Image 1 (cartoon, rainbow, N blue to C red):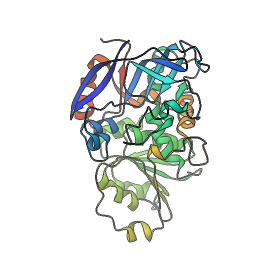
Image 2: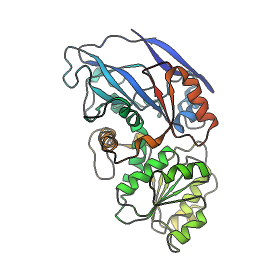
Image 3: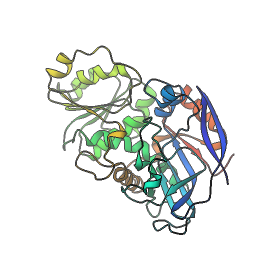
Length: 360
């Protein structure tokens, strides 16, 4: 069968290409994509071949994407976990059809499939959990599936707030109110963080963040003193991915506090006096890249990819997260070039929905 996929063919060059996809083997599931979500931070960086990206290391062409929802279109004769018509979510790239082994939960797929999928975010690393298929919670149908397409973006924020083990009533500062920062802030509230403070220089992003129900949104670090009665927050989440912001995260964290480096930095942070900024303050620093998650069993502070994504899908379906607000733009897949132009030209764009159901 002829299928379609989004392809980066060069720096700032996007195409909707075709490829052949087989019928499912006896233990495989064929998924037809309904909606996929573009990550404006990660995918923009890949499209521009910025430092610390797969395209900077390996070049083009490159298949982007890691968050989508779809329908099981066909199954092999030995498939036990899914039926045709099931609604599911996957971490696969932007493509009209996806062929995956029949796996459910955090167990690894059969041996013959384990090296088939490499992580586009971590070049050269085989990531078995990318084979996973998640069930969409019952009762979610039609356009209500759209917010769930960005489930993997929400999960990045989940991992960012698990590691510091936020306690009920602890103040949390999130620097950067893009999709990842907004996700981290909402999950920090669910963990009991109070107040959860969002900091961003962009008036447009601050306006968007107020609709997410954060306790405080500010545009200047000097406002923290009055917000927290002269103290500093014990938990700071750096979600901009800008190397020059990391020293500020250290500076704004309280003594003996925890700093989470959640945004993937594209370049070097060169001006850090670790004695003053970290050592003397007694800070604990967490790196929260998605590749650090356990593959099999979750444990306190470190949930597996499968468990956290299953949780996020259930939270979105239960309206415990403002799913539709994380999507700022929507395009039919035929206009995929326009979608990526938006993330290149609009720094305030949140996640962007690609609708694979129609070309118009």
